[in-house]
Image (cartoon, rainbow, N blue to C red):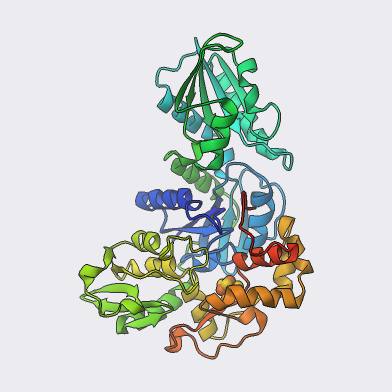
Amino acid sequence: MRSLVLIGHGSHLNGESAGAVYRYAELLRERGLYDEVVEGYWKEEPSLRQVLKTTRSTDVTVIPMFISEGYFTETVIPRELGLGHQGPVPPEGIARVLGGRTVRYTLPYGVHPSMNEVILARAREVLPDLSAADTALIVLGHGTTRNENSNRVIYRNAELLRNSGQFAEVHALFLDEDPKVGTWPEVVQAPRVVVVPFFASEGWHTLETIPEDMGLTGTVTCFPENPHGPQTVYYAKPVGTHPAVADVVLHLAEEARGAQGRGGDEDRAHAETWNAFLNLAREGMRLGEALITPHAGMFELRHALDEGRPADDLTTVVTPEGLRDLTRRDEGGHHRPVHTFRNLPRGWRAVLSEADLPRGVHNLYPTVVEEGYAHHRHTLRPTPWPTTARRQTGIYAKVQRATPEQVEAVARDVCSGCLKTRLWAGEKLGRTFFAGVPGAIPCPEACTYFIAEVREEVSGKRGQAAQGHED
Ligand code: SF4
């Protein structure tokens, strides 16, 4: 058995942020080359701290779904996964044995050499007859003064495409460092200019900042009076949302298989956990705010407060992904970064086979079954707040300065709206839903949403509208 884990950034604020990773996970599941494809996030659930617990096999390959190497791929992800590695990852990846699993960790997909073909595919989509006679290519990166690696991948791709001879000129330009994107009319001479954003997803930068900096009005924009004569700019979609990225991920995963290690069995603890859960589900059960009812060889999930409502009154989905999409927002349409917040929307039902039930429950309440069963068996080890705080780096390092009163103030606001019981703060949970108490769900470690709120508390900014970019 083999498990593939895709790691995304996610967001506490915006439900769309995880969308690209969801889509790749779905594409890769359809290919059927791995026994399972699981997603994990920095800012959503399952978190980086939790995701390895959710894998079924002892052979796990983890791919960071990031466009370049940097702070997340070299510091945050290895640290949170517990890989015992910090710093640059070698091209063949690294392998560790963790909790009986062989975990291989690769470079981010964006630095794989085959991304060159994805850039070309994006360029051809927007200008099918591009030509070395009259077409320039701009590979456009974010750039940052914080990490020199983030621009290296842009220069490398630009050079490879320049050497391919398919364009009259190829330029590497950036949003946040020199040479800046706004200089393009001076540096680009060809009459037709294709711009390919080397970005992971469609968002604020690709939809607003880049068009604004370049003076673009749509996919095709004419500039009749530029310094080098009339020019037409063809603006491509970002590379990170191209379906061919799924192939890049598979290349990376296969190349990492050479990394030392062994694995490939079904994880026994995982199998035992889910067998115990399925035995409960076959009898009918409540888990958190959800009701699970066996029916004609299938399982129906719905909000417990919708018990007895006719099926015709409810929106019905029949896949774990459908269940995920219906429950990612509350009834007001707001993103639910923590799935155990007591704001599960009503008005839906999911009808799932026994084979799909674990993934459906995972989408509804990530890691709740694994952690609930571990607590039920007295094997769940909580991580006290000071340990979590000490682990934080970068902009989150300041949570180490939070006083116990500040931590409790945040818990009163945040955790009181969550189904989980804070074992990490010393709260006790005698029985779990495995012993018939539906809302008894352990929280062994403060979640990233909580950590972010503590940071705001320490900064004196909590309660102010969150703005801009999340790190
Ligand atoms: S830290 Fe608080 S909000 Fe986060 S999962 Fe635990 S109990 Fe819920």
